[in-house]
Length: 341
Image (cartoon, rainbow, N blue to C red; front, side, top):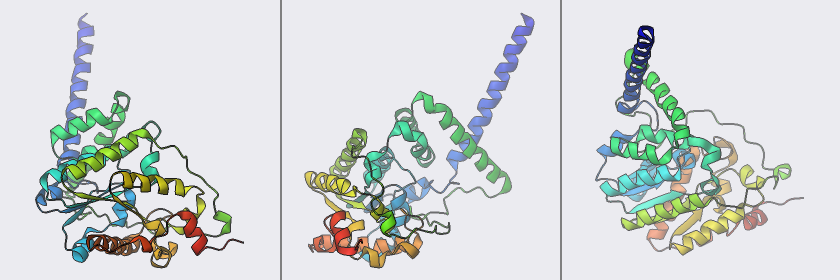
């Protein structure tokens, strides 16, 4: 019996040590901003000033530059995007920023991915960064309870602990950051070299298709997000950030999503602009030189696209009809720009 009690004490001491170490490492992660998506302090410092928000996943993260919007449109903008950021994550970030800023305009990025992502297949990777991006403990705890199932808790623990260890090592080496110096106003400069993008020739034309079945949970979150923005009096635009000609040619049924978003926007009294269908897209954003890979703009592409976006939004503000700047469908785009033998 005495040996058993000793074992229990040893196990208890070990578990206590693990808990204390884990708490220390996780605190290092949460108290600093050592990962590119951790921007709570900058958002807090800008509270009360921001009147233009953009929200989306990595297409927006690399594609919309707040500094260009500010200079071109005379606004104070912030990019709330994040790699694999879920619709839930976008909602929570918008909820906070709308409540503490005089936001007049919200640009929501949408794409087929927006409607097709499935949590059970994708797992928690899109929500994990949110735990390090949210500053208030109560909001973080609520997000944890609502976004992660008990089966995912070990992955959450591993993710936060491993990032905490990396943060603690930075603390030891003197490279620990209290404030994010990688992003500014939510824009992240992708420093990776551009990939080689295949030629958009006949061999790659209409060789793939996307499922024509949207995930209802995604639709519900999108509707909820639009309602949130409108409840704060913000005008909402839906946009699709441009992708390469190669990607757009490869898929046979992109018009299914073009029609879906067009009808969704009409039913919610929104403007929707798909910049893949901009008539000057191929000349302004060539595959070679403006894209990091087949779906993401590089730094140069982000500059060009933000100028395009600002011009379209300014036209809307001034009552100028933008419809002639865009093809009505991918089918029309193909007919007008490509000859296939």
